[in-house]
Image 1 (tube, protein in one colour):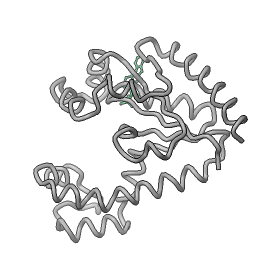
Image 2: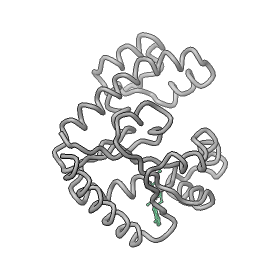
Image 3: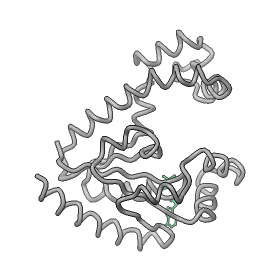
Image 4: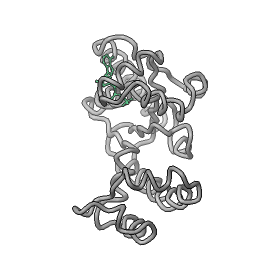
Length: 202
Ligand code: ADP
């Protein structure tokens, strides 16, 4: 188990994946909360069986996967259904994240999550890194990546923590408004810092 766990968060399109890809290339174990959230409802999982029993087979695709769009529709308009789903999945996601971080064999490890600061995932990490870009750039990059409309991106942003609040909760801010080469250098610098920090706390 690593002694230092670094949390990485940021709004949609801020560059979380760009940042964590770089740490992963440096040999650091990255646990991605979005990936874990999909793993806990994989075909054959207890959670998927419970979801199918609760919502009916309409939320399961013919291939046996969770139909996320259908499930989103069901919970979007119904607060109690959303809570039911969260009470089922959140503890499983939390457990799996803890297990994966515990198994991490790198000098320090990373938990990457868009909801790090909104959930108790904050308590799983020792320090918080926020990836930040101005909102116009966030919309531009996210729209280019996802082919979502600017309106859709702005709606997602409105549901996330406001930029200013997120920045206030950061221990470290990565300014990703520059080039990817600038980002390489920034990640390399932080990597050295975390290695040092990990040695001190070991
Ligand atoms: P997030 O994971 O936070 O949603 P991504 O890492 O996927 O964001 O970045 C959003 C998009 O912007 C991606 O297509 C990514 O390749 C691109 N991108 C990220 N950082 C930069 C940068 N510094 N310069 C140019 N493009 C970038």
